[in-house]
Image (cartoon, rainbow over all chains, first blue to last red; front, top):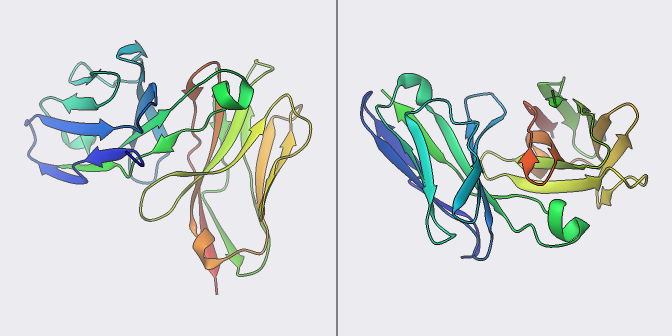
Amino acid sequence: GAGVSQSPSNKVTEKGKDVELRCDPISGHTALYWYRQSLGQGLEFLIYFQGNSAPDKSGLPSDRFSAERTGGSVSTLTIQRTQQEDSAVYLCASSNPGPGRTGGAGRELFFGEGSRLTVL
Amino acid sequence: AQTVTQSQPEMSVQEAETVTLSCTYDTSESDYYLFWYKQPPSRQMILVIRQEAYKQQNATENRFSVNFQKAAKSFSLKISDSQLGDAAMYFCAPKWGTYKYIFGTGTRLKVLA
């Protein structure tokens, strides 16, 4: 697609329910990231995918959080048994780290508009 | 530990004036990249400017420029001729290694008409 697409845009759920957040990255982008942004805070790294594998999932806050990516494209972030402290905006970003400096490590992230999760 | 600090939670600037947003970081690496991102109320983060640490020349993109002081580990963003559309949260984001971006806590910029 033309940009990174995230759904739903907003999600209100009750404490204890499971939620799934979806990210559709820019076509051809092999790197995909999930970040969490709490009110008035910076971006907290959650997980990084290269292709379908996740070499760094160190930012997932607990085992209630999981993510997968299929076909090197769409990713789903799942939060089980949601808690009120999970309320935040969840941002997805993708990148295409090709060869060279500006085409590789210097490539920027392209972000979606985020999914705002509210846990009542 | 690799850290990023944006010490100004909020800044204000008059339309058409110049403002500088500060960012400092700590790393033991010598080769890395530095980014400034803008997040308007629509929530979508967009790239403002990028700097490669091995380049001494400061990056410039139209009204946006950086003052990169590698020895001091400082990477400030200067916005000239500020416009109402510049109002947003600005995040400093160094990138170390092949994939790890670390974001600061952000500076909210208000532009006064």
